[in-house]
Image (cartoon, rainbow, N blue to C red; front, side, top):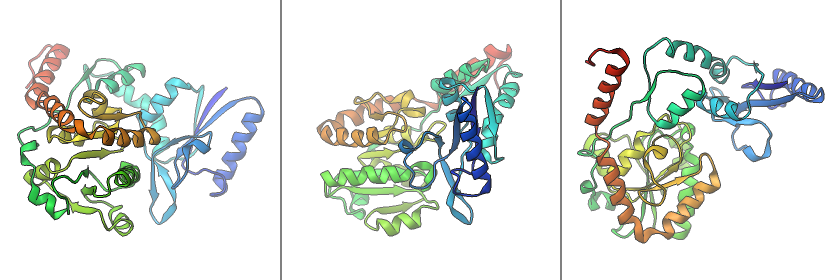
Length: 342
């Protein structure tokens, strides 16, 4: 038997429930069964040092030493296509456990409809593998009038302490653990070791800001920005670092491309859809830390090509119009239902 044990409370030193599960796992393995524990990654834990399947997690309120698993259904789908269990044992009723049993309901729900839309071809393929029917892509557009390299501002860069020739790395998004922000910070520090005058600008807010500001007061924390201010911040950067592994799509990637930045992000979601590695941005192998770091090194070593890469990124973004998205939606609805889309 191949059994997947889904739990929030593991490893065994945490509490009695986890100790029971530990014994269950050991006993089943001793009897010749294959058991894989699916659980959240704990703070500071190295995924390479455990046989368990780790998923992103977040701190439990008032108990920061433990992290609860995020309901990353697509991660479970991906894993269970490769290692398909005969039995899924949901040991704890947290969001991770919910994700493990939700897929059947979602499939039943969506297969009662004429059409299910997903934001990328990658996700359509994953849903098809999970026996969802009536699938099509509903792409995401980007406002290339708002997000435009022409809005680059040296005056704004000067407030960051950046001279015209100084490289500025940019992050836009929620300042929170689920965005894998620590990896983006570490990648920037590697860049700064090569380019001591490099600056890091973080646009957004969230629970990680206070601790991050204490650890790195030299970074510039721009807070929440919208509209023209956000567009100016994008366009005034040079290299966009986005290490998140939990995005459904990742609009910030295409906004950065539209703004003429050189992007580095993981090869999934928006990046897989639109980034061509080394041509209009850089794509690291999904959730591979060392590959992300290698991407920073490669991007810096190829900095003479940044204007070329940024221009190619902008060209890609200009093809992602909302008008084309709406037209595709209308066509798909008409084909699926036989009636005109609203």
